[in-house]
Image (tube, rainbow, N blue to C red; front, side, top):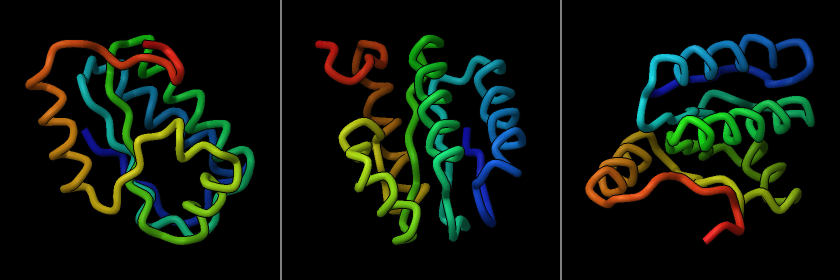
Length: 115
């Protein structure tokens, strides 16, 4: 399932994003892609929302991937060192391919550092 986001992700918009991602997880999806292609700005509240969503996805045994081709939000993720935490992709098609490959393997998502 893909949740597409446009505009800015900041303190004023994170509740909507959190609800959209939570609704997708409540549907019991095995893979969730958050498409940030239309995002021009992401503040700290947005990063926190994505980290919480990732943690919830792992708890639900759901893969959580970000599509993040835009330089501004991707730079924020990289500066914080979260490019090692999130699975980042340049397109929805790329994220879907990776999730399809995962579906062919056994296993469930693990928290960063877990083996």
